[in-house]
Amino acid sequence: METTRRLSRIDRILDDAQRALETVLGSPAAVRPNPAAGQPDVVLEESERRHAAGLMRVNHVGEVCAQALYCGQAAVARDPATRAHLLEAAQEETDHLAWCAGRLVELQDRPSLLNPLWYASSFSIGVLAGLRGDGWNLGFVVETERQVEAHIDENLASLPAADSRSRAILEVMKEDEARHADNAQAAGARILPPPVPSIMSAASRVMKAIAYRV
Ligand SMILES: [Fe+2]
Ligand SMILES: [Fe+2]
Image (cartoon, rainbow, N blue to C red; front, side):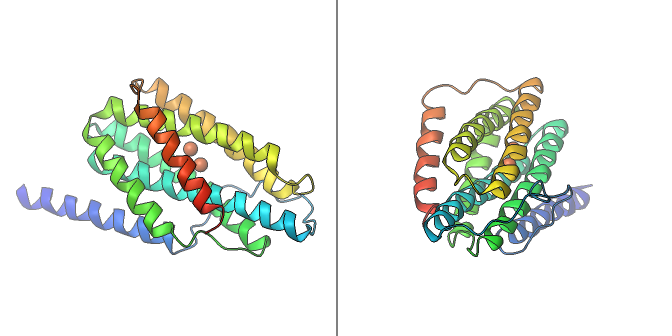
């Protein structure tokens, strides 16, 4: 019995490590079709291309962080239903990750060089949140998804008008994030007390400022 439990814990750790490596170094494949398919790939002015690439790099980092956060939370979730919920959300973020990575290639740019750091810090935050209990776990999902949704809105307003490919991707992502928040809410999320939401928002502002450039 003890050996089985130890083996399943080792399995989980190996799973987590594999997912981390795939997210940070690999090119995870999307399950759903790319929303940008069918949109024209317009050649942007250099300043517009750089701006669009900066925004899409930030979005890509956001997805790396979402994966890491949910995997960290899932690693310590007590209730199997919460764990399944978190891993399902992480799986859906894989599409977003792949679409943002693909758009960065089209924009002749690259993901953030600091992705291993973003992943490690978000995974740690996820573990800390998860250790507080499943209500907190889901509360973190709701707050994260709502903040990402607001951030995507800002991006949609800021993208160059001609960049309909990035816009198509972000519109689908926004719908998905809203659904992730609603699902977590329905699954029993607790409302995070102040100053947690403000700290999360301040941390994501720092991340966005850095990832836009590096
Ligand atoms: Fe996402
Ligand atoms: Fe999401």
